[in-house]
Image: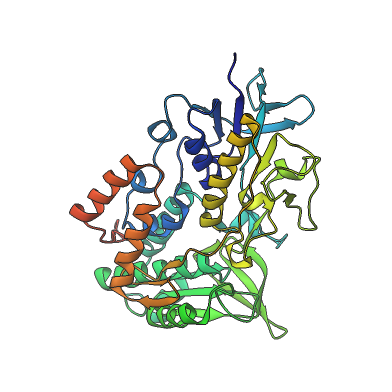
Length: 411
């Protein structure tokens, strides 16, 4: 008898960990538009050079079981009636008996004028590479004898979005730039801003860890602009509004971390959704009205989960375990299960030498928390052999940041 065909769309935490759990359960196919997985919680350490690409972005072919097929491609259409998936550039469609939707969201620019064109996203290795290059280029255009005022104007960067991503990114950038100022003997200081529409930063975090976050931002010299809207982004700056007053700011770069929106592929899918456009799933993670289709992660609305977990890697990871178990149960004719998802703890990077960790209801920060964060994320890497290689590299070779090397003054 032929094996059931299980097709997983999306290779993030939800898709990859589901594929790993389902190895041998059928004819499993993982489809992703990238050839590698990205451990996004440590993309900030990749920006700073504390980790290397192979540490957090291993190729799927290195992670997947030999029985699991990997296809790199862009999904163009999902035909729920014919049980087929169409990929760009492939004439032959991929048939399925069970389908897993794990395509994740995309950067949400909220229709802000110029944001999609000029702001830099931060979701992939290529985005981190581009931002690091932007910072290096900006530094290379400032000679050492430039006045402090002109230097600050030339080295102003803004991070839009004051959630965990914005905080982690801004503190990394500030530490890298301050280190570069010392190495290049530049006068003055860099300017790194966090712009947040809400009343406070990291709104989903508790007061215990927020105190460490605010202290780290202050020590890193990051400017905090809460209750502030971005009105437009231009090639060389942006405009903000606070208390009804508009301000134009010149900037070497604007990085956008202000949320995600539904993947266009999911927007086109004719299934039940909530008011935000998320796919409504049953407690088993089955798409309502489609017994053989499952969804998880950023695109799915699962009722029994605490709000602070929404959109996080740890939620997708937990959901993958339940989803894989339920697919096996479906194929075997057994009863499917539900699960209540809870917060497993928080670990926030706060610059190149600091972090804050919340575990077991206790929060702590500093170099020890930074080491704890590395240890925690080593344990959450996809496979045991990858964890072993990466753990050995971090332990024996270290995790020191890589400076923004001078390339010579450019006019």
